[in-house]
Amino acid sequence: MHIILNNSSMTPIYEQLMDQIKSQILSGELAENESLPSVRALSGSLKISALTVKKAYDRLEEDGFVVTVHGKGTFVAATDRQLALEARKKAVEDEFSQVIEKAKAVGLTQEDIREIFEILIMEE
Image 1 (tube, rainbow, N blue to C red):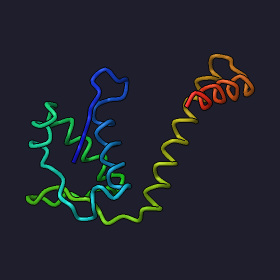
Image 2 (tube, rainbow, N blue to C red; image 1 turned 90 degrees about the vertical axis):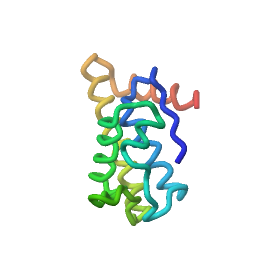
Image 3 (spheres, rainbow, N blue to C red; image 1 turned 135 degrees about the horizontal axis):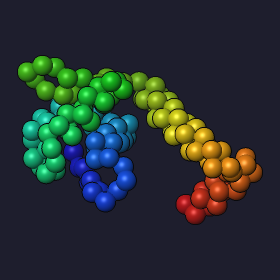
């Protein structure tokens, strides 16, 4: 498992970890029933707190991406890839909704929001 964390990012470390593990599961890089590194091993190799790794693993389990078996470890869950993709789309929709609400709160119109979105998407 290859993980790169950006300490200067505004995204919390546990979310960066979750996102990368999810991506590896969805791409097939991490196969169903494959064992993930232990919390202690991953925290040691990434030089981050074990609590951060535990939080990421717990959230991944809540989202149905992994299963933890007490005394055996954490494993990639047998998932429906389409269902997992829908979950990611829903998360993006939720983030867009939050951003739109913030934009409206500072007085931007729908047209202002569309214009900003168009500018940002063209930069990609």
